[in-house]
Image (tube, rainbow, N blue to C red; front, side, top):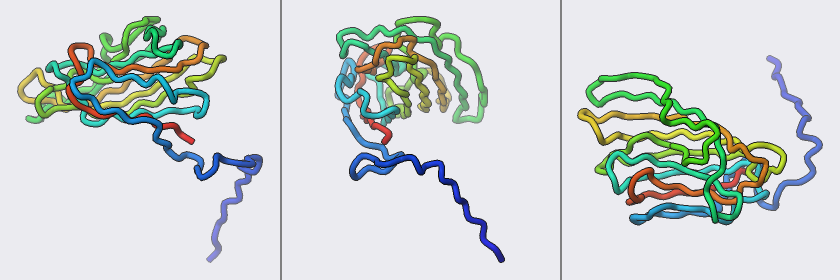
Amino acid sequence: MSINVCNNRSMASITALPSGVSAGTLVLIASTTASDSASISFTSGLDSTYKCYIFKFISMDPATNNARLTFNLSIDGGSNYNVTKTTSFFDAYHGENGAGGVLRYVTAGDLAQSTSDQRITDQIGNTDGAGAAMMYLFNPSSTTFVKHFIARAVQANGDTSPTYCVTEHAAGYANTTSAINAIRFQMDSGNIANGTIKMYGVA
């Protein structure tokens, strides 16, 4: 029996990788844990070192029931978080009692050339609900292209009985060719009671 061998030499032109780092490796840059915090910001480490940055959100718990996790971007090191964005937002939800099972576009979650904060999640319950998410930010230091992002989140909501599992998908772009060098995360109402946000670079 013959064995087929892949002989793809498309990587042959690569001469070196950063010392001790393999391609595709997640490099932890910063980690911050909230404690009744108004916001969590990353004002350093978001630079030209990596072409893709990943943020992981672990057990995000709002101080105010049914608050939504949001973000905004800065081109001046965090002095202002007001970058113009155009985005889309949809979700799916399903109740603990089997109700729902609905996929929907959420007009209230999108932006059209707006400097407002962008939703990552919908309403999060502040008892045992919490929320988790991942967000990708691509090539933030480019001075040629707009800056794209993709986020996916899940949480238990806190405004209905039964409780619903809600999964969100947000994507869009910061409509600027200036380098993005800071990012802020906060709830759309009240503080972040608990939760950890980790920022990684993709080697």
